[in-house]
Length: 283
Ligand code: OGA
Ligand code: MN
Image (cartoon, rainbow, N blue to C red):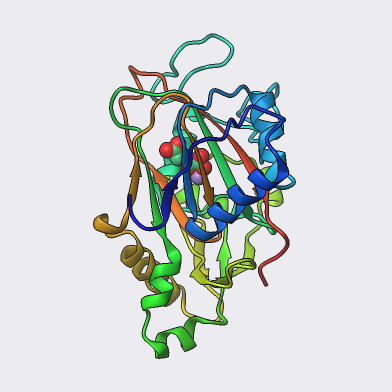
């Protein structure tokens, strides 16, 4: 495991009796490392929500019209299985294709005015092969920048948009109605964020970041791309190979992540995510 991922054992996430001090220590570990892996943590949604709420107030998820209304408003279901029929989606099903966007490096909910703090991803069903999740440390990229680049980037603001990023991952699809586009207007975020607990700085950009304010579109995009490329060179990436009942928690202020392919036409993969809301706007 690279320096920013830690495996934690000795906690039962499904137990309400875990002392506050243990939860506080876990939170401290997430803040310091950025990715925390816990094995053998069978959770249902109720238990996942109860545990997640101990880390902070949850985000209400952004639910597309194309998704099932019956889903819990605090649980993001990343799945290739139709919850109503139990069958694997047809390859062209928009509910499957929508998740193509997860294969781009991103920070969760960076398209929201108050973006996500922690994501808690619970592996319910995993394929035997593929479908790993990759993580990269955005603090390290910042640390290694020459001082003159740091000075030039420190106060910049990027615009983030889900409509933009889904246009990149699925240029031939229209996932969003006009009404949804209206509620998904681009938002502004600091390109460099200071972690409120560790005080470390990190570059804050991923697939939703479309450009940088005050710079030409191409120039801003080239900067974002270069920073991401540096952060995500293979030898720096943590590749999580899922086992069923793994829980991985990450700090979206410090890392970007992405999904990888698997044989989605054949093998079920069901992941449930809860998301702890951020503290406020970043600019
Ligand atoms: C997420 C995510 C990637 C994956 O849950 O936010 O991007 O591999 N998941 O499922
Ligand atoms: Mn994600």
